[in-house]
Length: 354
View 1: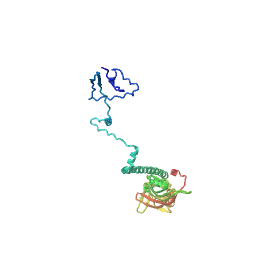
View 2: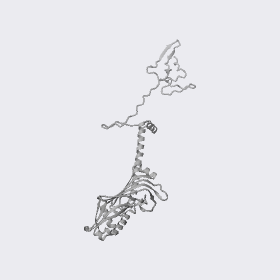
View 3: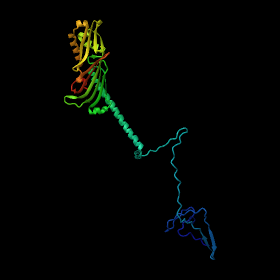
């Protein structure tokens, strides 16, 4: 019996080499191809045939399983798990909502396409602008009122309050230099030397576009002076030397428009009538009774009263002239006015800050 033939040339099956030794490629043979693992259901078998007269044995060996000729099955990976959500909120607490904000460009595009957002933006801008204008208007008015009030107080020697017209807005009046209406009221303690006199002034159409001779013009100025009887008596006592020493009481009579000055104990009485003469005030002696007729003749009292009336009105500014005078049961009310008066340029400290 001869040795069984070896494996075909180039076959590097595992059984063709001794156990425990790595296979050696044959000289000049191509590199070994990796063998495909046998199918689980298959097992190699050996068949041995003995025949022929010369006792030659034939050994049939199983061939290596061939690789499948079709396409390899594709490998399907399991789908990726979804991203983990936010942690669950503790019991009793509302769940937390995660809001992903869009980019700036997307946000701007959304605002421009939303008509309600545009309307709200427009209303907000208008409201802020109006609030700024109103604030500036109030501040400007307060400053102007303060400056004019201080100038008035300096002139009349009394506290004063000032207010400007509502229309047009004060800022517009200030920019254009034209003021429509200005109202001034004093506290009623005095107007210059006239004790307890109160002044109410209404000024309109003030134009501050001056020239070399004036700072501007005043279209109209109307003044109402209210003088109570107690203030007249106090003023006469301080300003009329001869008559003032004798006057202890003063009464006004609205029926005949006269003022009665009485001496102590009723020993002397002088009745005068206020009148408007050539745009000024005049106190005309009407009657003398008692000792006044003997000690104070008319020729002595009248010049003193004229100087007194002139001193009260000679320093009124802007050419104010008396229009009327009215005697009431409580005092005297006089009205003065001027039209198209020029505002003089002067170094009067009272108007330095205007």
